Image 1: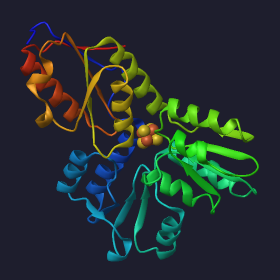
Image 2 (image 1 turned 90 degrees about the horizontal axis):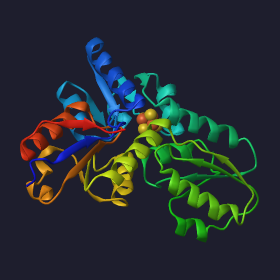
Image 3 (image 1 turned 120 degrees about the horizontal axis):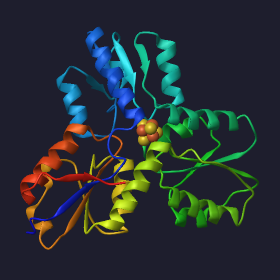
Image 4 (image 1 turned 135 degrees about the vertical axis):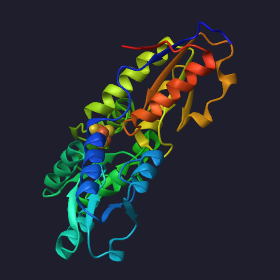
Length: 289
Ligand code: SF4
């Protein structure tokens, strides 16, 4: 292994504004209230979710099970039907940690649903954010995930196109171009700033290094996308924790890049940096641009 191996960190990596806001809300509520629930995991990072669970957060799959306490809505939002049920029920105090960027996409879809139109959401069909977005469309939403689906799509009239907040601009643009050839389209690009910044700095760094390590939940859409973007440029490993690091990866390597998804906490990024420092026997870690 080369002791002069250089490690660089992407300029934008780790917790985004929306995730930080949600975690702060959970911590604050835990300090003030006895029974704190989230509906499903608050964010897509198993280690952070486990930490909050150990501090007392209870994760619900179904709101019927509890009648008292505070329920914190996750960053990706929940379906309109469920929100209406919670509000009508009034048994649980609702704290809304839905990211404002996700809310913006929900509001756009809600407004569009007042028209006789088709709303196309470019995103992952089974992702909780997309499932919630669809619920705001009053039956007028179609989800398109891939270029293959875009090519097969049969519709009529004008399309209003919205994006899942964590899509890659490349996937979004390619699908829009395919649809544009057959339909009149109105585009609402709702990819969030934090996603764009993380993707751009990951791509830039991946072009400069021999190997990229992407840290974050395997269930995190935005982390998976970062890994895909890096993988298109250089050899890339997507890990959740230091346990997955393998010394052999660093043989015959001169430069390593590190980045992390928007739901990856700082302590995990730091632990990977620390372990890398041990592996390459140096603690010199430079931040990329
Ligand atoms: S990635 Fe973007 S949309 Fe998702 S929580 Fe962070 S800021 Fe909000």
